[in-house]
Image (tube, rainbow, N blue to C red; front, side):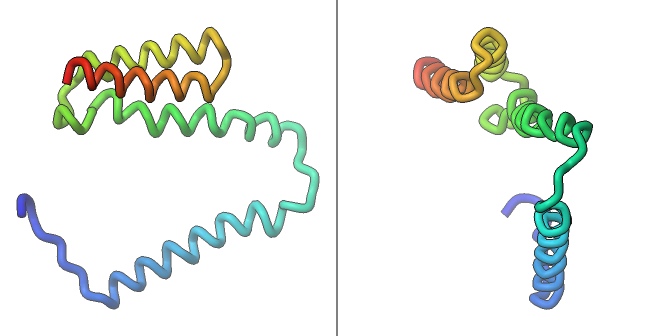
Length: 114
């Protein structure tokens, strides 16, 4: 095993799991249980529209800049796929087409170039 081995006792592990479960439930309940049946102001709805637009790039960008297959070294293949996916998304304004293009081009280029 490389690196330091992490050892937790069962009590600590279950306290962390329970704490995360309570926090996750509380966060969801705040939006769904307390506010779910009320009309939201227009300014809140306008901001919520951009949630997916902010989250998807935040999840994908580290995978493009520091790809795991190259152990974090920049990869022309990953940058090329990201550029193609961005171009398809910008031109078509279709999220599903952009995601399919990204997945297909990544798979295809990895098949061709290893």
